[in-house]
Length: 316
Ligand code: NAP
Image (cartoon, protein in one colour):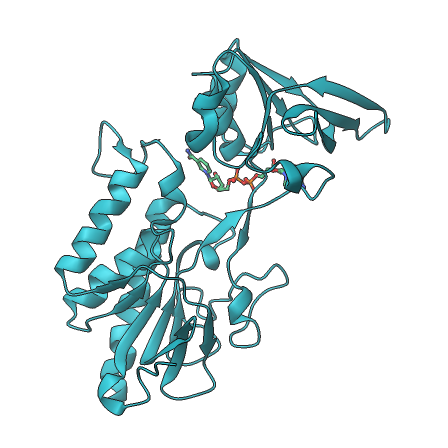
């Protein structure tokens, strides 16, 4: 086992966990502040924008910017200012020790401060057939899998902006897209609702939940829908099912280390970046149940780096 950080020489000023817009913006600011941040990007770096196509609402790009391109640029910018990027997942933390410890598998690292920016991941339905067929007709990423459904019928579950975005994207390939929503009213913003309603390929299954994902043993063949008002069941033939029912925060290994709410989101005690542990900061979707935008995550990453730099300055 390698123990980095047990030697005082190896104690980092700051470790950043996560590499979405929040983590990488924190890395840019911490880098520019001369803190030489160590960033655990995760095996899958870049966060949720890696699963999008054109991002049209990130300021500075009037013609939009490709999500993965934007994240690659942020990564390059962070490295340019001295961030050390480790393309591995952090797997455990110990915030009861000083300096703090962060483990990546068997390797351990120490730091005077930590910025948590692990984000959130797509929520699952938890119905029969879903797990077995995940990657074989069930997906949470239209950008990744949409092209497989040329001329086919697909369904999207959810009534928020993500569901509308996924459905609209899927109309590029599929001949028919059914949006399955558990209520009679969408949560999505007006512009997204209107775009979806105006698209002739999109149909809605209102007041419906997915009771089961149906298959021929190998591939998705349909969904069994339950009408939430009457409990009546009906089978709808589809070739692919896309989940867009929100997200869950990636905070499993912070349990017992920092305060979280009942859903597992980390609580920022000052409303910005301070956690229940002095010297541990949080930013981005892992603490944000309200805005969840790339730009708000980036802004919050900037705040975390500034707060962290101030903490380190006052500590020394
Ligand atoms: P969201 O707004 O939380 O919507 C989740 C949807 O899934 C809701 O309609 C919810 O139904 C439904 N849902 C949740 N759990 C379900 C379950 N178990 N079974 C069936 N349906 C379920 O999540 P989101 O759409 O991912 O959006 C998250 C944030 O990102 C929002 O702030 C959104 O504005 C933003 N966003 C913006 C854009 C954009 O501007 N281009 C794109 C994507 C996301 P209920 O409505 O009944 O609760």
